[in-house]
Image 1 (cartoon, rainbow, N blue to C red):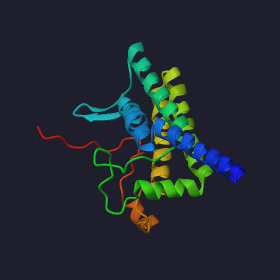
Image 2: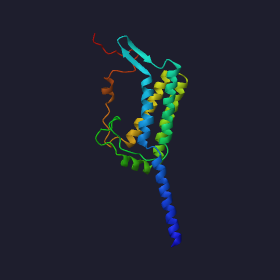
Image 3: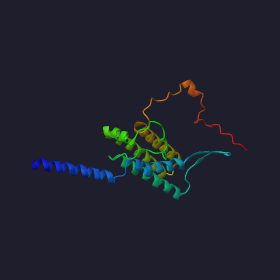
Image 4: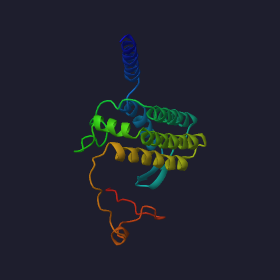
Length: 201
């Protein structure tokens, strides 16, 4: 009987230690709110084409201080992705401060936690994909290349969307994609001289 009590106490102690460790770690939601989302937004907004009355122009950082600020954002995103790759609680449900959280049918924190627990390696792989994209952004920033940062930003967006689609977005049937003939009627954004929007005088 004494042996059973000792074993039971040891198991209970291990459970309590694990619970305390989890409670002291930032949740997935907290990491997204404080590290990944703000950093990704800063990287996306730092480069790109701008349309004006004078035409299209490419925007990117111009000073060493601006590039350094972006480096901090890239490193913060990478650190957040590394944290996401380690087992932790999901935390609270998404809320309206984040895009898409008010969409009917989005997955709850409990449901997301269950999905992650069912295949932890899959979620860890999604976190590594985000980390790799963040490192591509950091390399582009190191080289002061706006075009490479745009490409890295697309990789970050793809990593985010793939993970959200797998764990957060509603489990509904995918929308029908337009056929080749329908798609051909849309103006190409990759045309050498895309039409510029008309501005009112």
